[in-house]
Image (cartoon, rainbow, N blue to C red):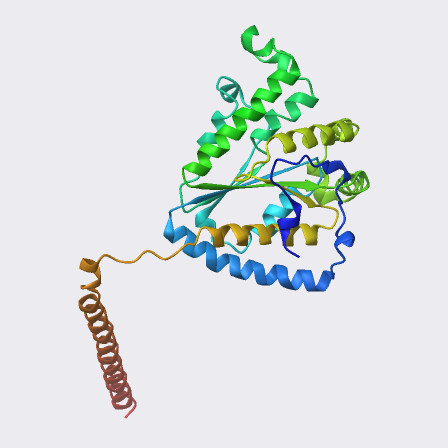
Length: 320
């Protein structure tokens, strides 16, 4: 099951609230999907190695969702087999005082990876379009009235346009953005929150205020629906993935990563002719060194053997 069917590419408006959160609607076999998932991870490791060496494009994976939708575990599991040297994860919390002194995209642009690297954004600039809107944070910004005095429709409509321009700018400068929304049901969110209470090892993830956010499930989903439709474009689409069965969601994420890496057509860089001409000479030097090490080891072994024989002879003479 390819992930393309979950793409929202702009143009035609899609009501994500009506989309499935359950893998059962795709009629997939769990064992088969898990086997494909493991095969995908192995292929990802090989492709990412070439991608890192190639260094012509960068990838940004944006993962958004309502609370307790599996963002952390998806990142942990999907990226576990990839060379950590070429992957960095950024988790965005409430802005710091320094971040609030800058424009809302400042901290995001600061974390854009080098080409050849993959950056994973656990939450992102979309918090400034969704959370700020649902929680009514805009009036509390320390900004001039010409900005925050605008009505919400105008203010957040402009932010959506700004984000589209920003993401297009990144695309035009060698970056591919995979925007993923993990779509879970109210029941699944409730189950996950309860698990954070009942399992001691997950207590640290839970705060009583999480229930206040849970009460705004519909408000958040309505807002995501609006924002996703306004920020889905041909070059930077959103993917609304069913999130109730995490084994299926993780598989779909690997499919998206594979498609994107393949589209980058990464290749190992070729050496310049001048350096290629030196390869045989350098290889001979290294092989001669290895032979020399082998000769030294044999000589050391002979000397050790001779020393042991001499020690035995002296020991025998003392006994006689």
